[in-house]
Length: 502
Image (cartoon, rainbow, N blue to C red; front, side):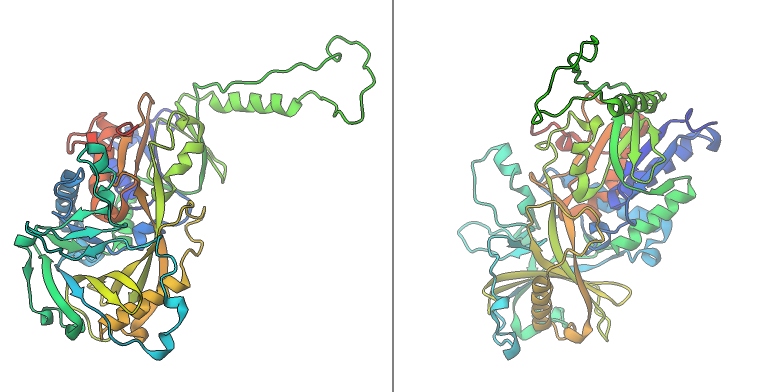
């Protein structure tokens, strides 16, 4: 069967959401159709699979840390789905899947800083814009039961108890279990921290409720499985999506005197001559030719070889807003996908002695760094340790090419200093490198997983923030159901619809 006769699905973006969508789509199609009649599925990526946040994040998974929010069902379902994928594809070996214990460390202060670090460059000059991807907020004493929360943006100011006001701050506060169920443990439970600096240590997750993966290995392993089932992967950038049945308005104008054959009147040298726009006419002919296919959309690529397609999924993370410039997405407004890139810095260390499976969210209060700092430490099965923090909330879009350097030497240097001071196992000479990536953060704190209303086959799945790795597989399964069945039966997606807020 010719490609033009087969239904075609194009997925834009090869991060965890795009790859998961591709994986579940080709898997479910393989179960429904023989190879010769199976719809064509194409994954577009301008750089490399997992080249941004999906390959440069901690890979932390928590089943209950989104309880009480709009993403509760999504998180719980996806946490369980991670376990099933790992069991089906040997995830423990292929992408480092393992359950682990999780701790919240409250460190009062770091009393001594090396003399060479006493520089003004270590003062927080960007206090209004410096946040962390997930900050541990200390328990506040009060008459009522205190609640420990996790944050990945600045603390929210209390607002009126309305759905809109509450939801507008959910991206800044992710609840962990109530303090009554969080037990305090001795500091030496995590012996690779400097226990003399640990004021309180609470266990906020165990092997039944928290786990981890290496996100880059996960993304590329799922991609390998999808390609084995017939997925096509094209390295190219989508520069536009046109709709075959749509005719953009054409501005017509006449050229005075030329059409009637009258002799031209003398023209002022300050007035430019009007000439027949032959190139415009030619481009209209070409446009009509391109639109004369049997499919509703055409994806225009920077490398040529445009793709005629029936359905399109935008799953390009912090770059999701690019679709606002595409013709077929003309009915989507910027207010419906207010997704920006939150720049998060990270380090990768290789300690001499392997660190046990203990994830630590460390809050350092009243430090010599002027203010509060929070870091996340994730030891991995291969002996490496992923450390992140020091996010810079950039007002501008991420770079066009995810491979472009985006990290701040000040932020990575600061992060190295902090982790060096809190763990004897993670000293300067153990750190291999430090970089940054952009987390796709939605202004309302929840992702968009939705068909574009009134469209024939346009979908958007983006804005998962710091929970992208956790929620990516469930998002991919949900979108595959939208693509194949026309509705999602595994999850309730009403909270993630494009037109929920605007």
